[in-house]
Image (cartoon, rainbow, N blue to C red):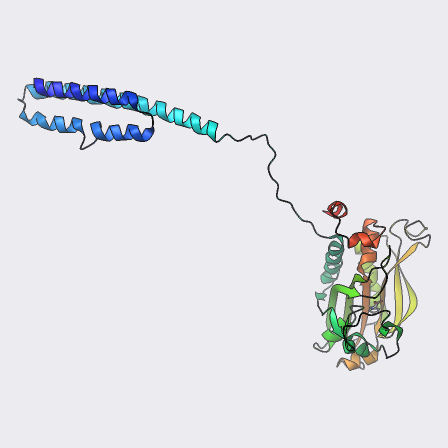
Amino acid sequence: MIQIKESLLQIKDAFEGQLNNVKTSSEAEAIRVRFLGKKGELTAVLRGMGTLSTEERPVVGQIANDVRSDMESKLQGVIHRIEAEENDRTLVEQKIDITLPGNAPPMGGRHPLYKVIDEICDIFMNLGYSIAEGPEIEFDSYAFERLRLPEGHPARDEQDTFYITDKILLRPQTSPVQVRVMEKTQPPIKIVCPGKVYRSDALDSTHSPIFHQIEGLFVDQHVTMGDLIGSLRLFARKLFGEDTKIRLRPHHFPFTEPSCEVDISCWGCGGTGCRICKNEGWIEVLGAGMVHPEVLKMSGIDPEIYSGFAFGIGVERTAMGRYGIEDIRLLFENDLRFLRQFR
Ligand code: PHE
């Protein structure tokens, strides 16, 4: 019995000695395993209790329990202290300054031209139109012949159109998409086609060799000029506000008959005259007309049964009006100081 008691106290001493040198929680764990674990020294000693008499056993048992709980609580104390220290250390080492502003990823924004395109397409989609597309590199048959632009027409001149070969060119308008849609679809047809067009114009504040149009086409039975006017009036009001008026001026396009140019009342002055409309009170934004019967026929649609209207909206002009942009070049120069204003 004396021997067991002594062993217990020795273990306790050894334990405390080692505990004093512990610096990390893994060292503390190693000591726990060594002294208090199932295969630890204390357990080994307690196994020897079987040799004791029944009177001795409770006495030694008591001592053993006291020693164990003393060791356990000392170990706990050390573990707490180490954890607190380790915690403090990580806080210092991994210090972050939460007052620094974060690194915001640079966010892009929609280009003003495409905002206007989206808005216009939305208006027509709400009227039941769908979006069509066509190539920017086009055959002259679609760009000219089947739109009734005969050879010798000024638009076919190399001064106006970029040719790639004799027969292939950069489309100078989105109207060829009318033909492409009609040759594949029987009426009713209701499409808008936004896209880039190319003309051999010198760059200045109102002209650019690349610009955008939105072509519209509606073909069905009994479509009239009244439908065209009603649709365009609705479009103008939706885009520029309920008080907007439209004005049609007779014009000539080879692929529509009758044809017109359409002005809308100036968004700057409402029609009384200002700098934006150069005192006209009106601003031209699109060309339109009733699809020429020969164009329908060439595209495989019977003009005896069907009629239709078409229009082509100038996107740059519309965007410049919408946002008060005075120089078309701003739309193509990719200057972020300019573009950020539309985010
Ligand atoms: N394509 C014509 C232009 O570029 C506009 C237009 C489209 C006119 C459709 C009539 C019908 O000016």
